Image 1 (cartoon, helix red, strand yellow):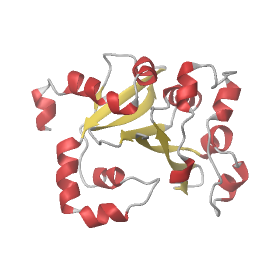
Image 2: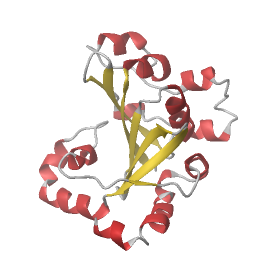
Image 3: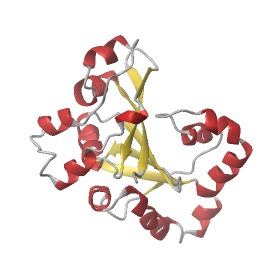
Image 4: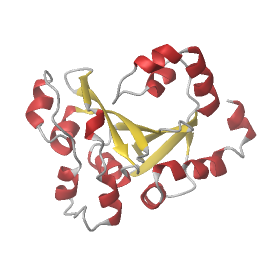
Length: 205
């Protein structure tokens, strides 16, 4: 059984054209469905073999059967949504941020305990996190039919987040590359609980 992670990127259109799409023409025209998406271009660019490299090999589980969405929010910026299986694609997140510093990468694991926001800050990958488990559960109960209408690769979590103020906190006491490359997505929640839930003030926010 696969464990899914939903991803939402706000990025320059060059990110999609240069790194992610298997069909750059479709992304440029913006009028047809993408036939697929992969991280192969990232691996090739950095001379990484995903079949032998542990981190990158795990990054390769993209759930193309769940769809890909590219929405142009301006002439230069787009919103890219897709889903990965089993692991957070941390190698690709890191390299994307390293190349395109103004990208914002959101990710949420299907158990919806917390949301990650990856940004490039002070010349390094920085992860901010927000606890959503309780508030999201309440929102879901009140908006169940609406949540059911949200189709992959979109996530109802993104819609939930539009209706509330997010209290982001830096998750700066560990290396995200090491954590996300060594543990499956559904296991990482326990590290979040360990690092964040001891903070009573955070729980109340």
